[in-house]
Length: 482
Ligand code: PHE
Ligand code: NA
Image (cartoon, rainbow, N blue to C red):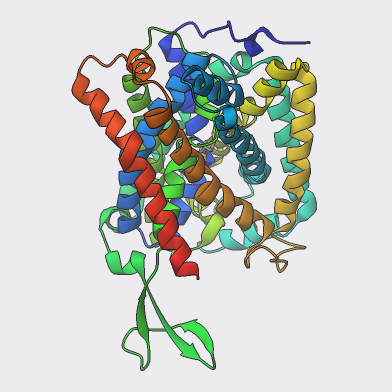
């Protein structure tokens, strides 16, 4: 049965609805799980600065482009890219960018769902008191127990995909609106509670802030290594034969994360833009979304790092960072069992509203182009995602040592490929498309910026700054990996 929301004529009633949906897409595991752990991995401040610059100068203009393309075309990203290109006298091959987006959404959701499963598991475990009075330093082991158990991971991964599919099949706004309107602000509040906890109950808040915001260029962009028996190994500065080497890894990770966290480069915002009312202002809407997304990420960092330092954990603990740090605090604070359970439940909801946007481009395309029913399209696509997700489940246990993809597990590879390559590439092409391929008058009309200066600023970033920045980072990365 086809849902009315799948048709191109349905537009969301108010500007706020688009903001809520797009914020729901943007705010998710990227902010609360991924941002803190990669910031920890890349040494803090300098990485955060590059990430923030990418958000402002690459992310924001591309977010505007995706919204305007979607709104003007009023259909799924693949057809939108192809149709507007034709309308501007360019090749329909631009539709391929939409295809790559569908593929990226498929890859991302397959591992995203597994991590959302961790949050579901923690909702249950904290809720039933497993972490009450947990001893400092023992949460690491508890996390290892979870990811070491493929059956446990499969149950949650499967449950998360079933819920996601169920909501998409019903049509996005029914499930989505209330969740974003009520639960996102609650999550925001809980994050504030945790920051307050970090301020008053750990004596490491200053250390946490310093880690997040002090630019230690050395820590982020240089590694120390020496060659022992023909193999490169890490070493301490001042050790004999130890070389200081520049590394571009944090650069591509920071840029990639700017795309990932804002849901850019794969058509999610474009798909939602199709439902955006004509009179809504794209620039101010985009700024609002970017603002919320950034604040949530920084709050997560400010809650997590003080707890990390207060308990002698390593900031570079990897993907488990969120799950070993916050439960430590929840287990030892008043009402922690309730707060913790609620927190991970809301993280799951935030993941859900992002997951929906990862599928929407594909489902919108299938329903509009082939008149497949919404339910059929959803079930088919979700099944494939679920199946690929098994690879990520096994990456933490049975297949932990299977690293056929450039020395990476399935999970690490899919994360790297999508966030660091596919999304920036897609975003770069969308920027070029909006800046060069589309007629100036079309864009001028859609953006409806009162001040021509702002329009020119958007155009300069879309035509030159964003594409060149992405290109340069790609080239530097390529050169370094040779
Ligand atoms: N932006 C989401 C997050 O930060 C993830 C996402 C990426 C969603 C790409 C849609 C598209 O969690
Ligand atoms: Na995000």
